Length: 260
Image (cartoon, rainbow, N blue to C red; front, side, top):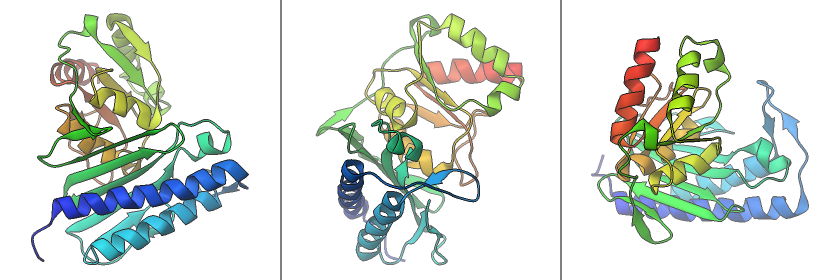
């Protein structure tokens, strides 16, 4: 396989996210019917058409790559170069007419996440990043905050259902008491805020890798640390997130490990 051209791949991902945004805006205006998938999560025609638009552009730009999409599954093919696509992360928000949904596109090269695009067309934000080239928001490179103590830190939590049955649940309560500010922005939003210095820690326990792969690249390229709740690097099986400034991530990971 030829050497990966990251700028070319990133340009394709950004174009694909724009194409998906057009689909999502169309159905946002007219409304959609909801179906339930086998796992009781909702899906709409907007999800499917957005993924089709994304796949078409990604396949044209990088025909040697496989694609793993939320709606149409994983292609058989190249195991070393894998696009990861969630065309509409936040379908429940979409159908309830709240703007906290996004398109997530990431690229994994030889097991490493190397680029990510996160587009929230109704909320009005797009961020992108690629390995070694920084994290970008509205044409400007962004960085995580320098926050180094929990007493100064702002914490945002997302899905935490499974954590409520975990020994670390009580520790989360202690963290809430020890931090400066607690919010629950959720979805793409708190990762965007983290990457541009407006938050210091994000904690979630019920996620899919397609929801977070692009966001992981964006946070890391902004200088943050992005792992699962056990401190492990992300894989296709990852189901939780601990992301933050380097100092805050290290301090909280130590506490979570002790609690478990």
